[in-house]
Image (cartoon, rainbow, N blue to C red; front, side, top):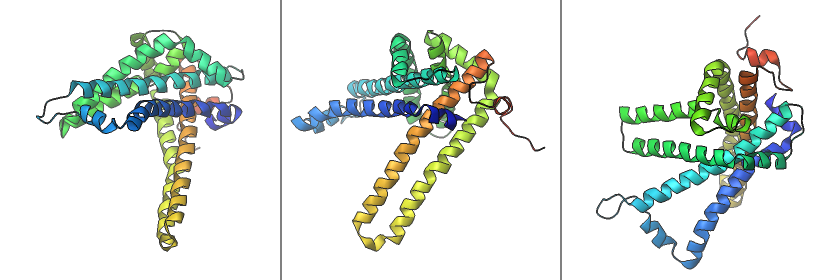
Length: 275
């Protein structure tokens, strides 16, 4: 059903693509001038996490957090656009890329504050987990997973309502409490689909390497390019499908409506039973 919705609005794939391209352009804009000026190695040395005496480098921490924030902001901005377009489709409209971008621009303050909030939490948890071993690493990993689950519906909340991060997180947690069964099965299904679609590409690559080992590097390079393109294209599609699914579950949980093109029996009874 998510695939049928995506076929109606193929332009939804543009949002994860734009997110990736934007991060790439920003990265190139930072590293490009440094490489061209010959100062890249000096920059890397300046931003090492530890100096020669084992002291923490504040510049490295600041840069690391800045990267966290920028990546989160870009992802949330385009995910908001995707969800906005999915809502338009589910309400019977015919969305465009411009509609999604307009919705994100209208929610820039909320997106900025939420990106800052989630990047701070994610950054702190990741740094604390780095210095832990055994049970400590497991605990911080568990906390990170809990945060990801609690904030799962924050973007749909931001699209539906212009609220602050605390309110959005509370609304997200409330939706999860109401739809935890549907959400669990939907995410397991999406994860299985991801493996089912992407795994064959790697199998073909490794089998090809074995079969054409004597054919020279050209064959290996060709297979590698095909594999990378397959993973790239399917990742964009899966990202769009995940946004559509998230929007459909949110509408069902908050409005009690079955989104257009979705089967009410599947939404309300996600685990099929034998008859």
